[in-house]
Amino acid sequence: MYIENVKKEMKLPEKVRIFDTTLRDGEQTPGVAITPDEKIRIAKRLDRLGVDVIEVGFPAASLGERKAAQEIKSLGLNAQVCGLARVLQEDLDAAIDSDVDYIHTFIGTSPLHREYKLHMSREEILIKSVDAVEYIKDHGIIAEFSAEDATRTEFEYLKEIYSAVEDAGVDVINVPDTVGVMVPAAMRKLIEDLKNAVNIPISVHCHDDFGLAVANSLVAVEAGAQQVHATINGLGERAGNTSLEEVVMALMVNYGVKTNINTELLVGTSGLVSRITGVKMPPNKAIVGDNAFAHEAGIHVHGVLQKAETYEPLKPEMVGHSRRIVMGKHTGARAIRSKLDDYGIEMDEDQFCSLYDQVKKLGDKGKTVTDADLHALAETVIGKPKEEKVKLEGFTVMTGDNVLPTATVKLNIEGKIKTAAKTGVGPVDAAINAIQSLVMKIAEIELREYHIDAITGGTNALAEVFVIVADKEGNSATGRSTVEDVVMASVEAVLDAINKILMER
Ligand code: KIV
Ligand code: ZN
Image (cartoon, rainbow, N blue to C red; front, side, top):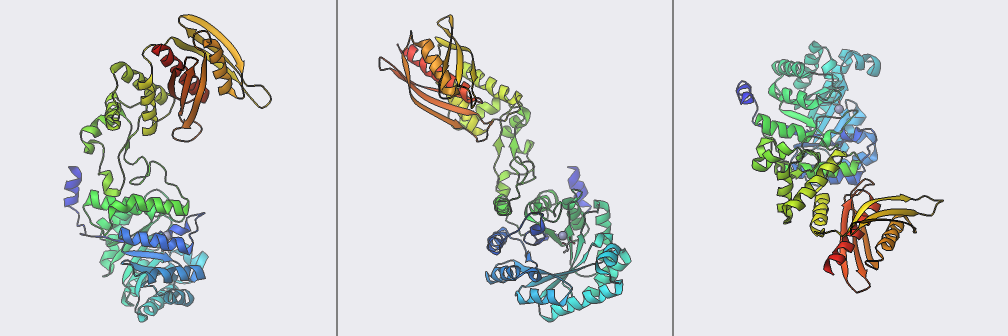
């Protein structure tokens, strides 16, 4: 494979450390606030997931942040517990008081930050950074230093400040692409150049403003970075940070680089973070999205059913996901048959053609057919009587808040077309009353039971109606229909039951 040849030319590390910042940069996602209790739940989960560092928050920001940090630290997790701090005494003290193992200290270094935010000279910033690192190390705490907006900082100055903090004893230098402006080639060169300038581990922190956070993190690893900052679901300021699940799986599968992540927990962790933060993942989100391992197209499904690798780059179980075959207009007969086999449903060729037809028609209307939908459609097809003495020719209903619900139903009864209009408490009741009056001569029927279900929820879901109908002679039959319109489903279900009664006579 081409990629294998390219990889041979790379000097890749065996392992990369994952610094998780879901609880800090992730919490800076607009509209997201995580309570201390929720932070503890997420931290425990991140620890099980196997991240190396958990940045639990910004202790100087509030009492709640400090308490959460202390409580997380007291859990005795395997991961190192880190607090963020500006290079300011009060921030550093707040982090130290939180009892964290690790302090991530930072200051803006780019001309924009120096001039407009900090109003400080290069020298002042450098001195403060060195002082902060020395202070952290004097307290026996692991120190990571970030030159905020590093990727828009003059390279000579960046080298100078990182070398200065290295001399001050910093453990890791982090290179933030604060506003996500890097492109992969530039990121590779930047990390290579910094590698030649310092002799300590390099970490990267990429933002996703141009959708390049994962790509930039990966090239940083190619260039020698030993640690990647990431967040679950790619949460973070503005467009977010490097998505942990994406970068970890790309490192593992595409590069063959290990991390300590227990990848089977990725989907569950993504779900937990999504529920707590209220930030839902789009279905097409890589690795953890609902559609990440869903197949609809007929050709793809055929391939996947023969050998999953034809259309899957990794096994869904590796990330705690599962494969889903979605029925729609691209779905082939083979995929539907395979689903029926899974459900243990047998049907003859005519029944199968009718089911296949319904799936295609729904697909043409822009719908997908879920497993539950297909199951219900199949049950309806199987239950249909072979012979229909009463056939629906058409119906209309009129309803509203100021009109009496009225239905006009046209039936073909043993070859004769008959029409009736009736009222009812609602359109379904009116339609069933009209049917009763039309079939009166051949069967005096009454509705014994009526159930309706919206199979997959939502107002445009398939409606499944189940009825029990009885005649005066004491014969009864069940009827079922699954279509999108509730009145249509009700009419079809009642006619289904009537035809069964007539067939039995
Ligand atoms: O994006 C950024 O620059 C940050 C810093 C605090 C490292 O999040
Ligand atoms: Zn950030």
